[in-house]
Image 1 (spheres, rainbow, N blue to C red):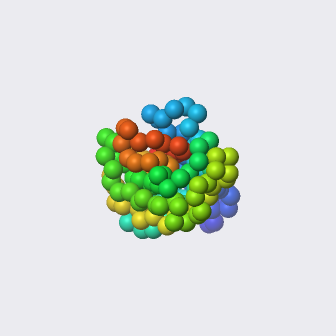
Image 2: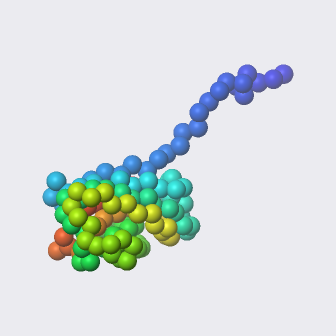
Image 3: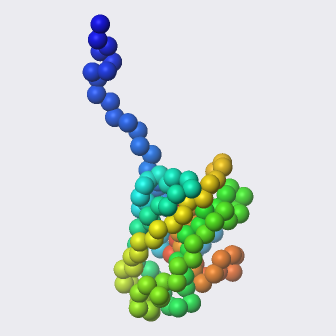
Amino acid sequence: MVSIVNAIPHQLYKRTTSFGGCANVPPDTPVLSVTLSPDPVVQESTDTFTISGTLKQDITNAYSLYIAFVDDGGNIISSDIVDICKEVTCPVKAGTPYSTTQNVYVPSFRGTTYIVVGIADGIGTTANVIACSIATA
């Protein structure tokens, strides 16, 4: 006897990572567009991050691109820091679209973990963040 269940089409649910604006930055801080491949990220492997956005401030050599994995306590599990001006001619004037593709190692993690992608002049509460996005890994 053939099972009718196998004949019914079904769609597999594929979770995608959704990035949004970061907390603790001014509300008018631009949100970076971030796509991942593969999506969702695979722990202990390399993932490709495609990042783009149009900023309201110039990107100068004072700023870097930060891609960080952060636990729910705010502790950085791992981070990549990209010198933007080694990839493009700086300054990138405000209003000019910026985009980059970065291969990032995804660490092993447990529990709630966030992916934070930002352009800033440092890390911490005193950093000037000029663009930011966050998602749950």
